[in-house]
Length: 405
Image (cartoon, rainbow, N blue to C red; front, side):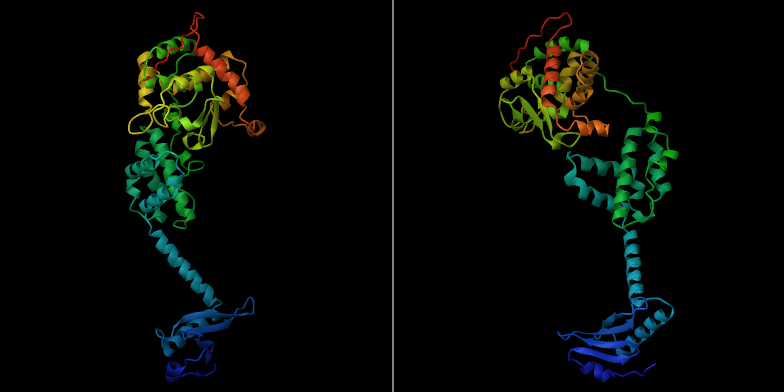
């Protein structure tokens, strides 16, 4: 091995830009800005090209220390290890070790913040935070990289049978946070909260412990009598419920309706994606009774059905009206009434009925075929529905009387 060429005095005095050889691959490098550092130069055994590994600045690393570091690099080469790649691997290992110390609770906070803007409902973030804090409390202070199936089961199993709907959401949220943590390199391996092929073998299906319970719906044969009673009530809540029924929309969509969404002349209502469950705009053809209802509504602010402090009416008010007319039914159940009537009593195609309800078609071929929203055919469907709602069991027509307050 070549003897050393530099001395400590030379190292202190060398300030001209250049590369100064100390021998055996060790160089003192002075750049054009006067910065001085130690470099170990060697030839890559795969490519045959020179590679430089920085050993540190001269101000921190003495000549004797630099020679020891260069000696260690030569030992690595002798063992078949590339010094630069070894440093990269060491840094990556340290990064992973630091990442593994990130707690599950910290990941929950970061996940919620990252997705908050994309959630339509402002309460969604608090729901996520509250359910995870309550049911996944034992994991919050643990490193996310240490979360395993046993820990997930300890969170889910105690309440799985008593609260299957809630715990299903908790499992989905834990799975989402862990998937996010994996994507951020905070953990590795399979997701211990995944259902298919994993937890489905350890926990009973939700349908086994809580059979599906459909919302109570008014029989469509009773709609005429219900509508007659509803139209006799002079309140904004009654008009909101009537609007919801005649448009076959969800309670929140009707209660939150805005005047800018309504085109009276074109007889359409466009519910924006942000207020739709499916997440895309939904155009609704307005039947003549709906247009008449809208023309009679007072225009106080941008809300069709104003509540307090500039906010729309709550869904609780129309629900209270519905229960006062027919105890036991729900406001959302009127969509089921509409669906049952359309399927049993009309010849309207299924895809038109599903489009009217803003349902996504599961059949991809059928969905691709039905690219437009079939407004003309849906308008005929909604006109037939309005006519049915106006008809009493004996065939009489319900009087339209409105003096909304």
